[in-house]
Length: 181
Image (cartoon, rainbow, N blue to C red):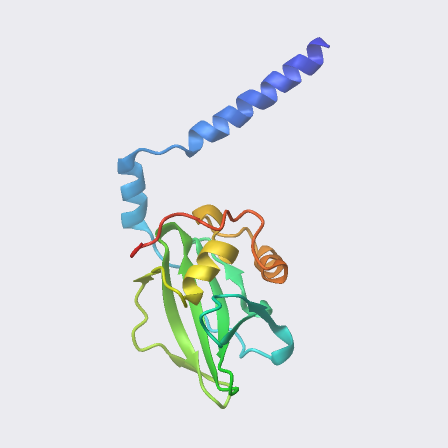
């Protein structure tokens, strides 16, 4: 009994230590933000129809939205990257390679797809705030799939699973506040 109690107490202390280690001062948080650097980005292969997973954005649009399951990556920089396909009711498609930075609730478009299956670099590839809105796939991806409770998914497999399930089970559906609320 004594060994069990010591083991339980030891586990509790380790857990408490981990929780305390995660708390940072405002200064530390600001320093991390100032020193943040994005990882180098290379373009993925062009999406193939068989690798697309659909996700819901809003009932206010007739467009269908898909993520290429083979393109999802989670960088050590905290950015979830993916290929997005937006398809109109008439079948026209927009393809883009994008990233979401969960910590700051921002997105970036690295490249857009051409009809011939190649990429063209984004003209304005700066980070932009994710805003609320009736039809906003960035908000849906951030809140419901790739940034549960404001933190990046752990792996590409978790992102694929969230898309298949219709949402990330760790997501509250109302993650960290985003700009423009």
